[in-house]
Image (cartoon, helix red, strand yellow):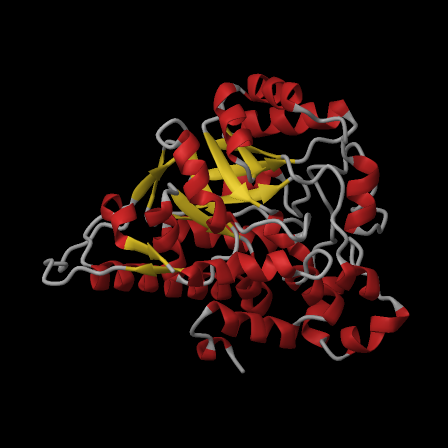
Length: 382
């Protein structure tokens, strides 16, 4: 299979699985416990049907919208994800370049493998920084200040990861950051020479937004679960969130909100947006999907805060359904990570082109000419 054979996100998943050592692939693909929530994140979209109008004159359509004060060419964001250098040597730089080319928001994680400054210098497109609150308050302050100086457009505080979910695939594979050639997986690394040589011979793996303060995850191999469980601040609360919003002073988003009550609290502390997200099913297994929750949250805070449906998106029609249900935009991580792992920037661009075409085609077939026409009346629940 080659890149030109990829015609949907699942095809990129297949190609990524063929090209990555299995511990690395399972880190992207896996989730918590029985992975029920991960599966539900996508299958939830099957519970609602789009209702098209015909003879609507759709020769010209406008897929653009405004997300957190910046124009986006599509109602779609690329969610921040960690340690992208482990998946392809180009890492976050490939995603940043592809996002700018397609006019989309993208985000980088605190655990990014390229620095805040390098990413900011690379793109003038809308960009978000995902903050994990560490026990080291100096590290938190450092990352916020670096984002301010680098002109990041928004800060997203991750609120669903005070401890790590139980990611059993990673427990079985022994995946660490940086990746370690464990005895059980050595054959998989040996039979993926392209990935292995890129990993060994290109720029050294590091976490440059963290390694000024901590060695774990950059100079010292550690599992993601151990990192989260030892380094992150489990005492984080709503007062913490309000202080971070104040320290940041710019557009502020909470990532990981899943209840109407928490959405209301986000409005009260002055957040500009919430990402309705369960961390791709990687944290609390058995929770609802973001799409399941959009209507309830929109009923509670619609019109007061932007609502981003984050997770499970595999099709352009999923984006359209999320908007009809009440979201400002949809977002996802695996939808571009599979493509990054499969073929770097070329893969991400092909994936985004496919999703853009699906969104445009879906709008025309629905008889809508602008994102604002994607309303609740165009969705029916089974």
